[in-house]
Amino acid sequence: MRSADAATLLRMSIVIVAAYMIILKFQVLLAILLIAIALILDGLDGFLAVREQSKGSIGFIAYVRAATGNIKYREEVKRFKRRISSSAPYGARMDIAGDRVVEYTLWATFVYLHILPLWILLIVFVRHSFVDAVMGSKGTSNRMKTGFAAAIYSSNVGRGGINVVKFLAFSYLAVVYAFGYPLLPGYILVGIMLAYILLRGVAELYEAFA
Image (cartoon, rainbow, N blue to C red; front, side):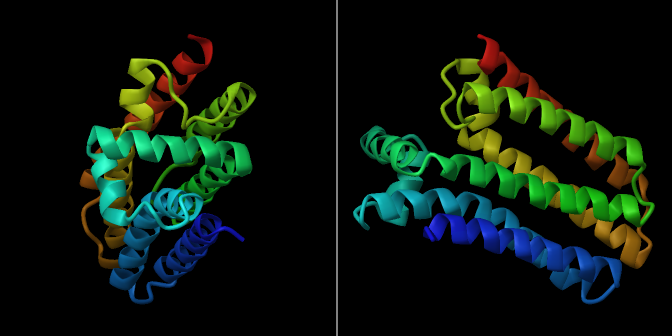
């Protein structure tokens, strides 16, 4: 098994454990930390895939420099990512599947706890199911060609931003359930997250049909 795929499986397992800890009100602050770790692993699996393909020649610092716009390292990392797409075409889809498991687990947890209404979960299900089907027919979402889609979906700001919003929203909902914090700020964060998710969906569809 590739190390990147192992990281994907690990983050799915971690968030499922965290969800049960929240439901049971057992060490909720630790559960929030586990959610943070799971979301961080979402960025780590890309590095592990590139590192494995490059046989260790691309280190973490070089990968970060590429992510922050260093042209020299960015082109080198892109070259190895193209090799990954050829040698392990399922890798990008596995990463997306991991994203969905993590996100669905957290949404479903707070619907189950009656913190969030069911209709929000249904919107997320429909959005992801439809967009994933369209993008799957066109190729992976990691190879955005249009500037709009790249900026909203596959840029480092876009990817990092959605994970930050997810962490803030789901973490706050956890303390709402466990410690009785007011719900309104949680709804505001969920609204921001839902808007972000829908905007990213528009970017993917724009890419698919551009």
